[in-house]
Image (cartoon, rainbow, N blue to C red; front, side, top):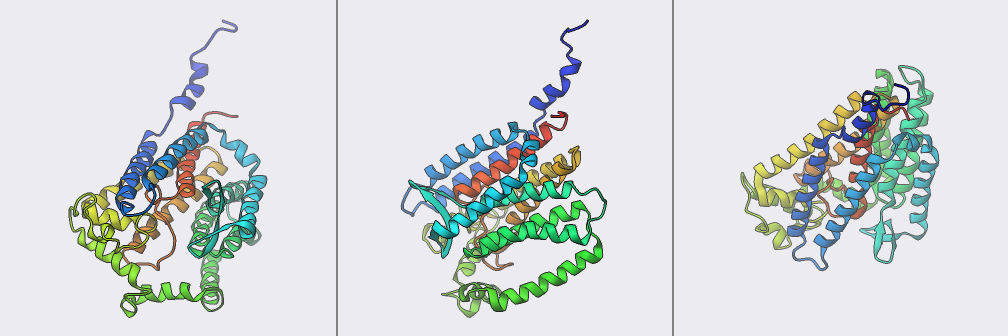
Length: 373
């Protein structure tokens, strides 16, 4: 019948509304709840109400996740370049008028509300890089395309390094690597890139690092050399993790956190607090939630129908995963200490919003894979 309503014709729209990967949503929400409980325990002796602030950011983050899921990601891809320029403008602004915290000029603040532009730049850079790589119509990327991709990422890295915040700057590397691997990179070029990275790393060590940054790396290699100075953080973190044993000491019963031995316990070392209070089984459960988030996000990438969608998801998941791997390795002394927070668990508004926005964006890509516009 002409003009009659057809249920079959509306099926794609219905799938757009109901086709939500609830496992990804559940993983994000459960991690955020664990984060709230751990931040409350870790900040019990600190001034201010970190729990209320983090709870507010989680609430705003849930709204951001919903908004990102409903928004058409193709519009973001279409305007990816101006969005990228906006991210760079924030990084330039913070260098000029930003607030210094933790030795780095990395925050913009107004009326008690802070924003870390480096977190915004991670998302804006991923959008432009996905848009650029998707426009290349070949199976293997040429040297020109790889160099241009590297330059897209190098600009925000350089601006963040000037703050200086080398930890945040380094997080752009897995973002680039994940997208290049999916975009198609020749093995010879990959090996050449690794060699170049080693050369640049050596140059950075001798000419680009401050003394305190070199001290952090040397304390990682030999924390016993200065147990009350540069090696103090990693020593206390190892004690906290090890003392949790199998089942932990119990909620808010950890001596390292409650007696203030563990520094940055509600931010960079929140995983050490979790390990001390809930032990091996508790940390295993949380790592399982991270695996649940990562696996379901990659599944969405596998069923995505557009190249830019696949590239964007892989880049964002690479970024997310490296945060998890590096932070958890850091608290047990496997890698040098840097200011790299743990997704959904570490205290901080900008980073919390980024994690929820990434989750929502991935959900939106999945929900709209049946919709042409």
